[in-house]
Amino acid sequence: LGGFAKGYAVDNGASILARHGIRHAVVGAGGDSRMLGDRCGRPWTVGIRDPRDEGEVVALLPLEDVAVSTSGDYERYFDEDGVRYHPIINPKTGDSARGVRSVTVIGPGATMTDGLDNAVFILGPEKGLALIDATPGYAAVVIDAERNVRFSKALQSR
Image (cartoon, rainbow, N blue to C red; front, side, top):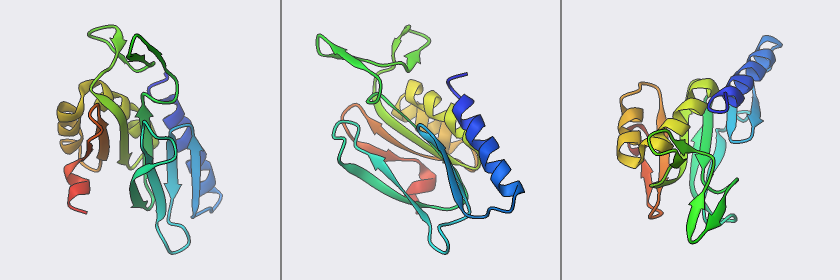
């Protein structure tokens, strides 16, 4: 459930607010958020954190009425003999996924963005962005192991 449960909870929280007439709000849980509407006439601004420099932001995204989920190798981890171990596991190897440091997925619902961010992380930058590009309504920002910031086609056009 860890791959999408927080997103599901966020979507349910946003639905409750919407049913009560709330049109502008952000519901968040960890790396998962759902934005209702805009920020009273302006977009919500979401910062993509540099996964190796806690105080730095690598991108700012103006967003309205969407969900955003981020997975990274920088919140819960340990380093041993120069190798970082974190809880995003590649099922093929049984080891922490490598090749990506952070993935942020944007889409209409947090349940799906929460699941997709882990899938993209495990697939790696090329295959992961191909998955996002083939999924209508979704976009992503991937920071790879070399600290390159990559954007899905939907974000490149913006």
